[in-house]
Amino acid sequence: MRILAVLVLLAAAACGRLPMPFERTPESGSPAELTRSPPARIVVPPSTSLGLTEDAARRFAVFLAEALQEREVPATAAGIARPRYRLLAAAEPAAGVVRLTYTLVDAEGAVLGAAGGPRPLPAGPWAGGEEGVLRRAAAEAAPAVADLLARVDASTRAAGAEAAEARAPTLRFAGVRGAPGDGNVSLARALRNALAREGLVVQEGAQAEFDLEGRVSITDLPRRQQRVEIIWTVTRADGTELGTVTQLNEVPRGTLDGLWADVASVVAEQAAGGVAEVIRRARAGG
Image 1 (cartoon, rainbow, N blue to C red):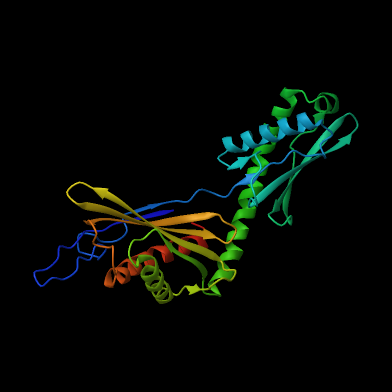
Image 2 (cartoon, rainbow, N blue to C red; image 1 turned 135 degrees about the horizontal axis):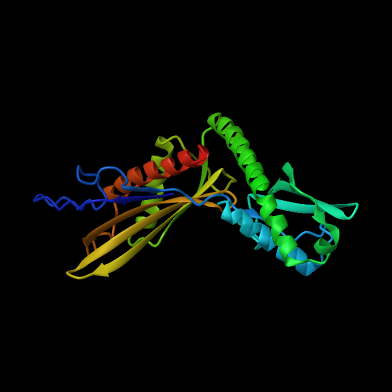
């Protein structure tokens, strides 16, 4: 999910009021863009319980991941640190054939569900790692595995939503980097206060449900202007990125080289609303 807020610069008033480069105006409205975050990843590791050679087991894992991808299941045979799910395959020999089973486990290895291959496979070609047999087995397994994943995912989301409603979201805030002047300090302080008003519990240095960090970049433009971009990135505690809140504006060069003052409060107010929206949708499974 990405929330983009393009905000209009207010010109300084005749009395010398400091420009407020991120102040909400009637023209700026609400965050303008929302996109869904990528779906959860499922890893298909090579299995030693298939009665295959190491090379054939690796090829079968690739074929199975590809078959799942064709059904729009975000699977991969590549190694990923702490994926949400892993799919473990095993083969059981019986009277000249083998029967395959597929077990879905979570990041801690807890079994979430299992599905069987729809048809037995000839033992000889299977043990020989014949590509046609491996591909057929992967293609036939994909529908059952996709259905299993859908059921497990729906059950997990429902349970998570019920548990989440009983507690306020906790957030570990890593602070802000890259801002000129006192921006890193002022923005961090203002955002902590704004997040609290949104009902988020900011925890310093402790494990939390979500993590947040801010990054400011300044780009010089013609006519002594600067583009200011502030990106707030929200992740789960396991590092999975959930979404970003991006704030953009142009200011006269050097405007923010000193004290950010009220600018930090305005930026934080809008950023906190976007962060809360990312977290709300994550908890709702969106």
